[in-house]
Image 1: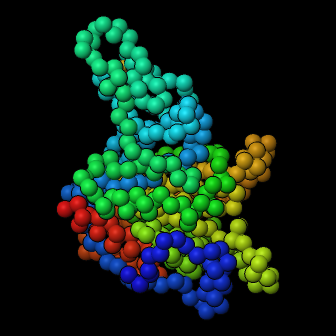
Image 2: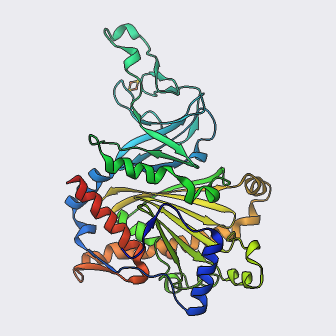
Length: 389
Ligand code: FES
Ligand SMILES: [Fe+2]
């Protein structure tokens, strides 16, 4: 690819320089074009292969701020596997397969906080570290090894504001999965943007009638800003003007706001991108971390079926903004409703793409040189599918 993958991303000042140069020249970052076969969005066999591959690599599971305190727990199905995360009394976040060891009921439903996890069906009880601690009428289970029947843990790490899970179906001695884990375990690229947003203020999980890759693509280019977001983002941003940086299998796309031009008259020492750009970090394969004025969104794109995907949005903010919001919720609704309006425009396009792919007009989906982050996403996906063959 023409965009070399470095370990991290450029400092904010360098990003401002690149954006101002693009504004002056009427240009944008460019890379290789890509053609993706339409069948890859419609073929259930391809989807099965992707799901199997996705389960054998690590991924971002949750923002850590979703479970800040001991006992906090949340569930989500990842690549078809029901999981939940819980913070223990020792402060450690752990991820478990969401299934009771008695008859298999999903143990955790929705978010909550508890000293212990009690199954709703027959009352088997687990400690926050996953150990089975109580079985009602235990005499009815002769030979039950209570100490060996704790919840089944999935390897995970909490790094720089994110909880990252290891492979759900690990393959033996998999160096590819190890290097993929390393790429998600160094938050140098996003740490200073995500960590201050330590308060979860909103979660929404919505099923969408489209392939998960169409949803990923939706975040990775600014070529659609004028056409799709005519009355929402276009009046405050730029059409087709992005900085694109690859770091490992991940990508950061910068979407500047027009107020960035005010920095021209100021000394570089005072330059900040805060409230002047949106950074979208694509943490391969299925998570976006997107910065906005006063909030950071962590968007998790969970493939469900070939043409169905669940999108979960975790909205995070700083403690100061969260407190201001709770005192005067109407104060920030302008920005939030603009974001919601822009998001629904994106989803309308993505739904239309999925419908249109059935028309038989195209053998491939065409991505131009201004959409190179999408080509890179598909190239990495193809490479991992190849490794799993
Ligand atoms: S299924 Fe959980 S206690 Fe029976
Ligand atoms: Fe968009």
